[in-house]
Image (cartoon, rainbow over all chains, first blue to last red; front, side, top):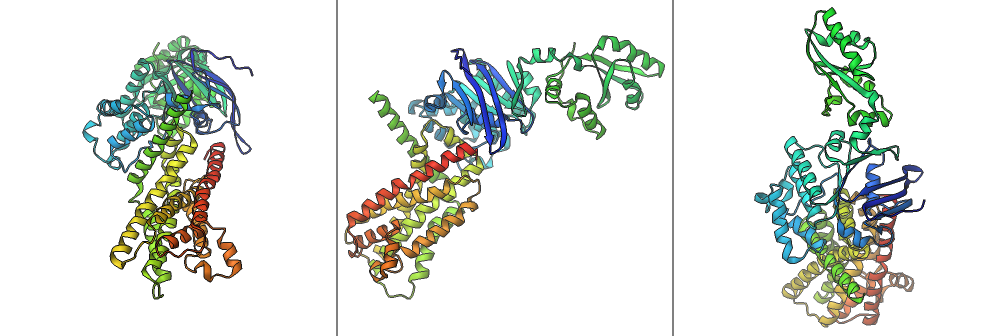
Length: 339
Length: 254
């Protein structure tokens, strides 16, 4: 494939392929990331996300294909490109025997940040991340969230124009996760291009200008979150909470005309349908017929998670129904757009 | 153009030094480093030297060769797999510097530890046992290139793509012990049978021990310039397999 390079693109990937022995991990993928955008790279475990990111950050050699970053071929001379990159891997790779300050100063020296700027930037970052008071504490005494924040601070101390983040928030408390998402938005507003590898679909929905969904090593879809959702209207739904004992009416609700799947979501039922407006009167009539009070009733557009599940070949309702049957609510984590 | 290359060279040397300082801070008190790097040469020395008649200078020359060899070659097989496991090695691999710079930095870490332990050994030998160094210049010439060469040797094992230091400790220890017994440390070269001596000449430790023998008691067998040349060449040659193993790891994704 002939590469058509554009100065507007931060990353251009052509025909990128990676084999581990006989195992094809990344299968001839091509995509572009524009300068200044937050680009989400989504996929289930083992889909090829981290492998792709490791190839983009020079940690892994592609079997085939070409990577161009800011107009430079990564295979020819990675040195000038590496200076513009920051990398936050999935594991917070900080030096636990060193203090937060020493970790930052080490990274600043490694990236040849001018001597006069190192201390100023380190202080700014430690204050931004709420770690200034702990600057002289060894990182082995830090919580997971603090280590994560320090890891990000280390990745941006040299002011990279392209930042790779691999699963930045899983395992963090809500406050730390929100702080990191806010930081990603701020860095992006300041002009940093962000390549976000995640399986947190709602996070990608909130943060990303565009997302690519990778499955079995191939790009299955690539577009803005809203366009992807619009392309999957068949996963629209009606969510209804009924009293008393609305949870016992799954079978009845599932039998209503137009319902493809019914999924229990806590004290509510989510009824998947291609035409929510046609289903609403049926739901109301069902409640009246059985002497039930409608506590809440709303129509929902497809979420990015629905799109993701549909693209990656997992039945939207089936997966969630299993979860509901076990009494869990894991399928209901994402916030959905109300129409 | 030249200015660009000079700046790049200056940057890379500075980055190698940054790695040395960081590794010294992080690893000098790690149990693996203390055991295999700092204590092992002394155990070895006392195991094979106690109750044998030996002049202080001869004993110090032997101990200096042991500490330089063992301490320098212990760092690579311990530090790099550990860093791979903790994910911190990726930080170094992703940094804007060449692989050679990274390996030079890691080699210098082992050499630094060896120089410190050798200096301690020498101070004890001189102050407590009254050893006299016949040729201090040769001692310096033996310790510095020797430490670098043996650290580069250890780095080969550290470059094996694994995240578990235990995977490389056994083969590296086997090789190091093997070299120890064939290299004229415990049996002087002049007392060896011709066949054993021919094998000894294949080991860089032989030349380090011979330089120490020139330097401290003043009685070496080979030309000290030959000893020095072999150690310098070994230091450079030992980096080649490390470079290849790192490239292989980058292909394999380990």
